[in-house]
Image 1: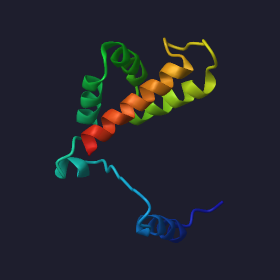
Image 2: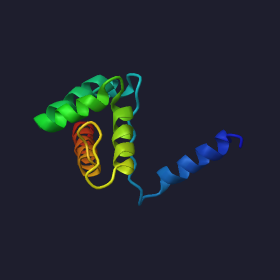
Image 3: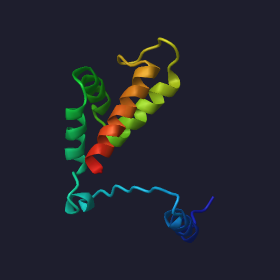
Image 4: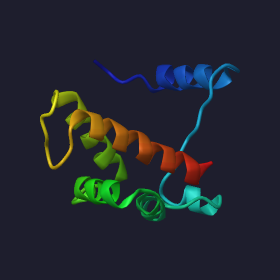
Length: 112
């Protein structure tokens, strides 16, 4: 399967043009900082500061050796894999989903 940059750009353009769509982009490499938003390291620190002590410890465990995006992806994989009372690193499927939701809410809060 070949990548078609023109087709991809037209698809993104169509999505951005629709009035019913709500699109939010977060650019890295200093773009967000130049616009007055936190960079990824600052955003991560702000997110951790917003979490309660228990959630903060659980999320710090997910961040170990990972960035913010990788930690969120890992939480989502954990929630998909676990069932019932199964646990991984102190997380059940329900606590992983809740932590994911709370982290995402903190991200939105600081990027709004």
